Amino acid sequence: MIKKLLILAAAVTVTQAAPPQTTADLVVVISPAKDELAWLAIPWETDLTVARRKAATAGRPIFLWEMDGHPLGCT
Amino acid sequence: MDREFVFSHPEVQALIREKFIPLAMDDWYLRRQNDAYGKFFIEMTKPSPRGNAGDNTRQGRYVFTASGKFLGFNNNRSPERILSMLRDSLAKWDALPSAEKQPPGGTGDLSREARYLRIPPVDGAVVKVFTRVLERTKEGKFTKVTPPESAPGDLRHRGFDAATDHLWLNAADLKTLLPPPDAKPGTTIPVPRALAQRIARYHFVDSTRGEPPHWKRDEAKTVTLTLTVESAKRAKLVGRVHMETSDGTRGYIATLDGWLEHDRGKLTALHAVATGDHWGDSPLTAGARLGKSPLGVAFALCPDPKGADSIPPQGARWLDGYYDPDRN
Image (cartoon, rainbow over all chains, first blue to last red; front, side, top):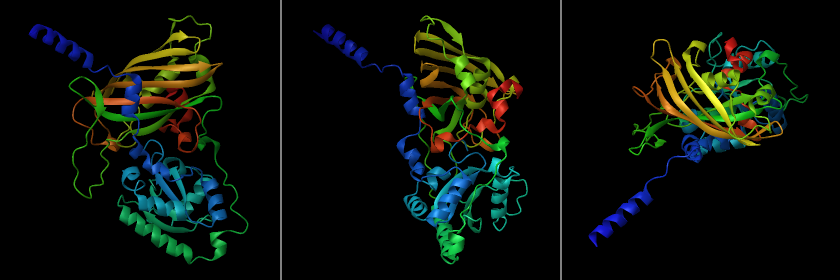
């Protein structure tokens, strides 16, 4: 009986062994999580001419986020 | 970092969305542009604390009118301080005459030098590239790093989030990359050298703490990327790279695994991941973990690039050198 239980336990252990990480798994781990993309809730323009046109039409000032390296890309 | 500490803050987001036209741009291009586009920016910044920057960086956050009148500046990661700057700027805005707020003749276009224009490749592809520092579990799996506790008010860039870049493939790349539809399953095809070098030298970099140094030609010790045809429209993508500076203080040794799908000369899907050990940093990316540690780079085709997806690759400041790294 004990021998049977040990064989069964070993089988369960094998069954529960973690599967290897797939490319899809790793894409999820490496890509930004939802909370890391919260800053994209701001509708950023990327062209000064377009922003000026929209600002003049809407009657709003322009808020510029300016960095060495594009703020929406690699900074 | 700004994305986390400033622009994810609900109050900052609400105020910008409701009262401003938000704009994000790369200072590296703007301050070099000797055209109407660049001059407008330089003129606008003159009354700001960056007004005497000369050829140096003018990075920061500005508020200005459509006609170029400067209203406010901030370069701090404290949400409270940026909220204060935004409110002060709005008060100045409210006091302006209506003709300044809404120029009666419109604003017109600003001319731009072609050499500074970066437009996503026509008939090509934009691939999102995400980079993240990783940890290995006891089982050998890669996971996100659990950041150590930071002190309250500590707004330093620690580099545990995913960094974003874009890989651009032009029409010529796709023509040489995609296997012919009649290629037999099992056929292996090397990724064309220019593209393999572009991926390795400009995208297998640790961009998690700021602008990364790209690999020089002689730092690409091994770059082997190969497609294996699986069907008429699908191929497996594998590779290995060894990048290392001549003094050995910075390097990345990784393997790539993924696949792509194509149809009638168009790339229709691409998913690939590089994992391996990276070591070292640079003046603009200081603060790397000590020794060799896992770094992952994920590639995913962006099927309909718009907005932030159209930002050029960081390595494309010399565009010809980006597309043909052997020239660089």
